[in-house]
Length: 174
Image 1 (tube, one colour):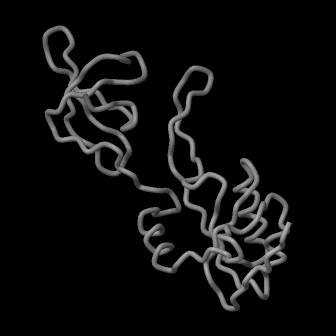
Image 2 (cartoon, rainbow, N blue to C red; image 1 turned 120 degrees about the horizontal axis):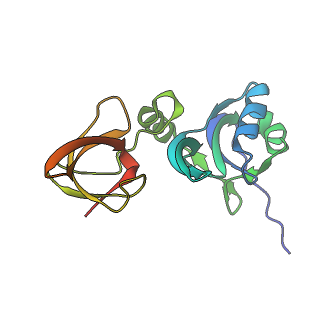
């Protein structure tokens, strides 16, 4: 096997670091302990635990985090942090993440948590409830509730429309 020498560019730059399975949070802490700037965006997801849906934080990019580092000065110490697999590379080049991409991600992730609006619904559109006691029932989308990840839908119960508030990811567009 031919070994290609890695091209290392001096200076502070952002790089993606690949982590071992489910070790992103540990790697983030260890890199921060080395006084390195780390950015790890999270995503709020709904998971079932003991049969009940709950909101949990998961990495927006599973298996990766971003670190601003000078590879010449701190590259080896970052690479050998427990839980790190390697830097994201393309051949002999360590992939650099531009400052613009990091800034764009930070704007979309206030407080480090991604603000994603997965549903593009207009009031009056038909939706299906996916979880809870009304799972499988059709409803009418009313609105997204400001300042939260919840939505209001109108459900036909006993001949009249009743407002119901649900997590945004508990409904699907029909």
